[in-house]
Image 1 (cartoon, rainbow, N blue to C red):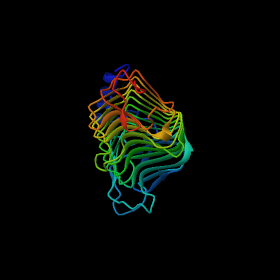
Image 2 (image 1 turned 120 degrees about the vertical axis):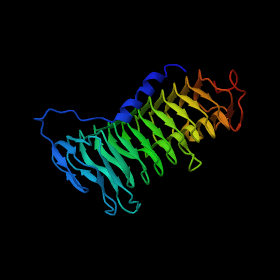
Image 3 (image 1 turned 180 degrees about the vertical axis):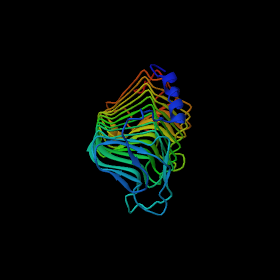
Image 4 (image 1 turned 180 degrees about the horizontal axis):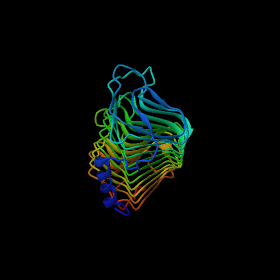
Length: 314
């Protein structure tokens, strides 16, 4: 597959296992975070000094309400078994502002692991696991998730909602019940690149690795997707899917819905899909650009497009 950064993809596993360990001079001033429900309400650097168990509170674990906050989890865990979709229950809730950084620990459980509604903010080196609904929920502009593991969410691993300029890079997003990365609610300018995205959608028997449900000008590039229900679904126009390795999908490797036209699907390798490797809902591909892909089976308008070398899927 062209330009797939395989070595780079697997190099992310080391920081995921080791987390991001805090290295600071003794003179550096941090505000300690020591209890569930604490609010970080002024700019500055904060340090989680102990594991937090927030079971039975039915509330957010930590709330960040200020801009320019750096929250170091320092290898610690924030956890809760509480799950109630009628309440806002997030392990870390970022409520507006900009310039927030969250790094170096684990969030386990809650409705959503991390809910970030800010701008120019960054989640990195985190393990987010076992969320009842979403692992990480993102809204706002120019936010980023990198070098993190997002797994075993009750619905989606990472959901991007009404957002612009979101970057999802160098993560392991696997074993989530419905979708690994869900782009919806008119989100635009997202980049999902250099991620490992495996076995999503198996529990629910729908969607899978990446789903562009609603949004334009999004780029899905250079990811390795294996064993998802469907690999990549495009249900909104003017998006680009390129240089991905999609293998072993239970259903379809890459699928462009009729409402996803026109979109571009280029330079992908899609093999071993149980139903079909590449599929366009339109019999003529309706303006979609399928070019220079490697695959074995295809459908256009629900019937065979003739395989490599013929038809509108190439």
